[in-house]
Length: 263
Ligand SMILES: [Zn+2]
Image (cartoon, rainbow, N blue to C red; front, side, top):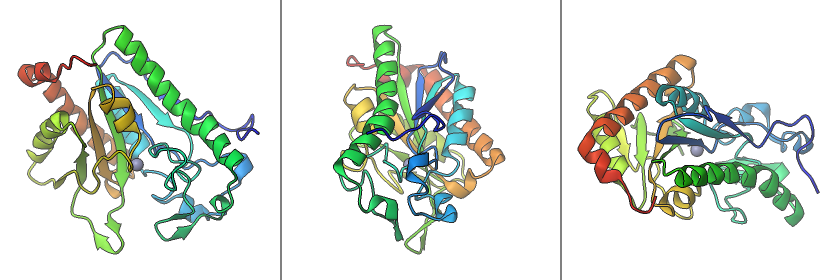
């Protein structure tokens, strides 16, 4: 059974494939697109524009950051409501029936075959491309630092969130610590330390699988969606992040310290 049709876009897109930088960007929730065959999943157009469908502004920041850093970026091509590219397939969080408080009718009766098609045609190609690029860089002995770009809602279950952005990690806080310090140097910013989310084996896929298992330096970045909803906001945050990351890369001592034998 096949899911994607000729007029559907590819499962992912690559920006700056010849980027020379050690930085390597991923954007798991870049798009609200739903394959033609699945209609709208029974979800209203308004809901397909919300965070439940995509990380608003994250793709724009990832592309601008790729340009600023001369870094390769890989962005998912479909909505997290079709299949979440940052969750282990087969788990209830992979294809959700309810997101926050919104029913996703098109996900309520997904057969094993239909779930497998979403995994094979959307999830797998995206992660295969990330894996292929990382393998290639390892073969070339290129230094690689994975940056995973996301965005979050200003309020959650009625509580407003104080952070402008968050720096996320799990077992390896090396890069996160450096980035946190640099972003917090801007006194007007409230930067979360593993807030509003942290990285975990069951709540994430990209960082645990592609970065932690390879011993790559990495960080997850969460941006508050209202700050990156416009092109101007995306540019502002891409420039801010690029400045901070370049400053880390240029600070010889810490950069050397980052060199890991396993990557
Ligand atoms: Zn996300």
